[in-house]
Image (tube, rainbow, N blue to C red; front, side, top):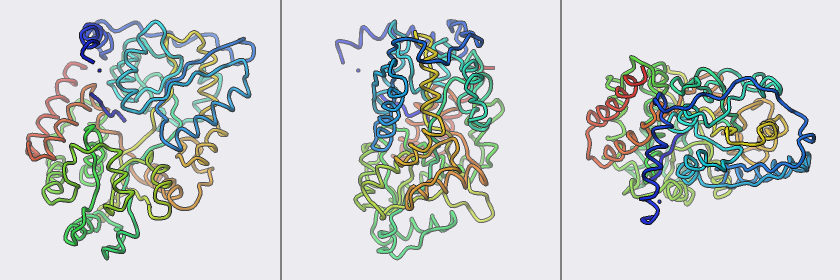
Length: 455
């Protein structure tokens, strides 16, 4: 999902003009959008016949299990294809978001990049003609069979970048994601609180934890995107699934200012006023929050499955995971989809080698490596054997939501600017500087402006 960030006085002036031009060129629907790359081309799948190749790969797989699986797969790829050297540039999610836009537009663009699915990143890169549509290689390697339509929609755009969820495929994800609730069984037992099985019980557990003098839930919202996950979790329990989907994909006719969305925003404000979060959430970063949870400072943490390897390493059996327990009578619903997909840039001088790399790191063998390193593979999930404990919880949660429940898109997919708009407005909502109604009006103004322009 898109998680925005906020470069040095001597450099800023030189970058302002370039960024302005780039922004115009990269905005979906912009008059300056580049002609889309062709969707048909001859494909070479005999990697050895390509001769010596150096592939520059930019990724954000920096956490423990994430980095481990990339190191293993890169080494295995080079062993199979010794003529291909991989130059890996690994950056945190936020650093990648800051630097990728400039790198991908330069004369020496990386060959393979992890580009956020959202409109502000992948959508903008597609509109500017900076990513290759993958249809030729999908046909050669059988990727349509590997990835069902429900997954392909998260990496699909029309060539002008305007319509998300349809058109050409521009990336391949490795992992599935679901945002749920981490909990500390020992801390719940100390507080005399049972593991909740419904949304009503979850809210009661928060209240009981607070009444017992505990901080019920950790949240680090300095980067502003983590609160989107909290809002999404609440919204998924209170708002009809079709409303959430229409809003997240930026469809005409959807509205943020509905009674159900108002109820969700009010709930976030109520939780903040009641002290359900740690103090100063807007001054605490996401890593600090999960680390505080890992130290036992709260019984609950709302977060994505990408945190599982680090939390398991830090907490062992004292951490479990569940999808948000639904209100009585409703199906289990959670925010999620895919991790950041791997894409091929139009600046790559070795797209066939890059496509072979994408095929390798998303193959059935790669899915087994992902499982062994504590990650959640997005393809062939049911065929994997996760270890007992947290990994098993994560696999079960993803299956429950994706197969029998409602897996709903990230909210910042809606518009190119929604991550920044909603992130800042949620900071204000949590700080009591905006009412729920003002928060929703701010978000709706961004949404309406985009839908009107994009129509």
